[in-house]
Length: 460
Image (cartoon, rainbow, N blue to C red; front, side, top):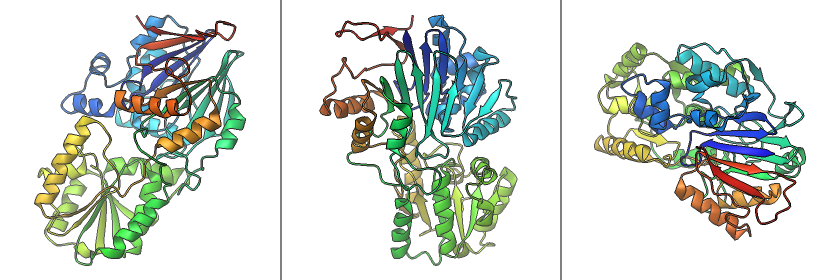
C-alpha cells in the first residue's frame, strides 16, 4: 500500500514537508520554515522546538509520530530555500541517524544554517547530483532531475513504488535559458520518471496568467531601466533575494557596466555568494567588495552619509526587499544604521512581494519611508521562479498524472490551481485531490473499485 502524509505546505506558502510510505518504507521530502512566522517568533527570543511547532513556524513533525509509521529511511531536500530546508535543525531530533540527502548547493546551505545556529549536524549527509537514481530498498527508488528555479541545484523528485510513482515538484519554473545552472527539460524529466500516479505540484504562481518569463529577461529589464534613467550623480541601491545567485550575478555585471564599484552588504548575501564561488557557479569576488559585519557596515555607511565616498561611483546590494525588520534596508530607514539616502538616489527592487500579509504590510512601510526621502523607486525588476497558469498546463500535460495534489499554497492559490486543472478536464475529488496539512492519503493499486481509488484521512 502507498500512503502520503501532508505535513506542511498545504495551508500556507512555505513550511513544506511530505512523508511517503510504500509498504513500510518511508521517505520524507523537505523540512521547511514558514518564514514569516519564523521571523515573528524569533525576533525577540529564541523559541523552543515546541514553541516553533505551536506557532506554526515549522512543520508539526509530531503529526508524523501520530501515524505510527516506521522510522524514515531517508530525508530528501529538494532545494536550498529556507521554506524547504530551514526547519531541519529545529526538528531533526525526531529522526536521529536518518540520512539527509540533497544536491551540493542545498547541502552547503544546510551546513551554513547549522553554523549560524551554532549547532552540529549529527545525521549522516549524502550529496547527490541533480540527475540521480537512488535505490532505497525494494519498495522505493528515488529519482531526481534538475529543474530551473530561483535557487541553484533545484531538483524535481520521483518516488517510484510498486503502487505507482509519486512526483514532488515544489518549486520549479519552465526555463530553457537560465542565466546559471541547468535548464528545464520536460521531455527528459518525463522519460526519467515514467508514468506518474500522484503529482504533488507547486501552486504559488497559479493566480498569474500566461507563462513565467525566463530569468534572462531580468538583464533586459535592467538594460531598459538604465537606458532612460539619469544616475550620474546619485547612489544606486539594489535589493533582491540573497539566495538568488542567478539574479545577483546579472545585477553585479550590469552595475559594473555602469562603471560602478559594487558592494555586497551583510552576511546573508555572503552566505550564498560564497557557496556559489566554492561550487564554481560564479565568483562574486571578481565583481564586488563585501562589507559583512555590523561595525564594518556602520563605518562604511557613515562614510557614504558624510560624503567621504563618492556616491556616483558606487552601487550597493543590500537585503530587505520584503521589508524584513532586521534586514539592512529596514535598519537604515529606522536609524539603526546611518541613513545613506539622499534625494533622487535610485532604489531598485529586483523582487516582488511574497503574498503573505506580514510581507505586504512591512513593504508598505518601507515604500513610504523611501518616498519620504524622495528616493526614486523602481519595483518589480523581476521574473517569477514559479509556474504561472500556462506553465502548469504545459507541465501537467507532459507529466500526465492520474492524480494531482496542489501544494505550496494557501486556500486562494490552491483554489486557483484547482480551476486550472478543472479547465484541463480533471475533476475535483476524483483526480484533483484537495488536501490540507494533517491529511494523509491511502492508495492501493489492487483496489478495483473505480469510484474510490484513494482514501483521504485526517491525522488524529
